[in-house]
Image (tube, rainbow, N blue to C red):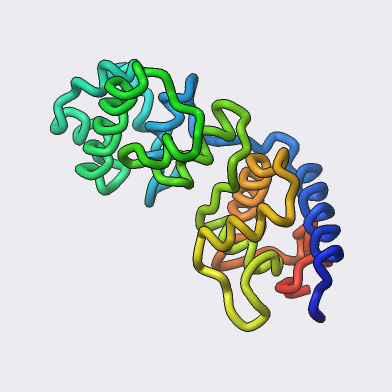
Length: 221
């Protein structure tokens, strides 16, 4: 693809979004949760594992510890046992207990609603904070960047260069935020994730049935 003018890239980004929205009208956060606290804990547990695995663990976890107060008082070993199958279980147990403790001690059990406050909490960081704000409160402060979104952003030419992929998630997020309107940031992540899981699969991208093939500089068709 020849060097693209900014206006043309924005127009292509809009078309990419619209096509993916039509392709995946039911796209949503696949971590099962009933409130912001459960979403935060589930997202912390989702690091280096699948949403499906987390969804197998959280029903038992939330039955045992249904509130921030309950989880804050939990024994590390008991939580480790419950989240063991998600991997890195010691760190994850420590993080979710620490998160619940800070939520109770600093915020009275009420979830803060700023990126700065959330991202400073145990186990959270900017990515998880964006998940919480966007999906629990419909607040678009940024774009979630996971492995699917990083890969698709590079393949679509929305970040990086023709010769080198961008790997810095902060840079990728900034590039996407410049291309897409704020009100689309949360859904954009869901659309990229769904497309990355269903069609633009890392080891075997199915370009032949991709709705973006004519818009993607990396298309094989």
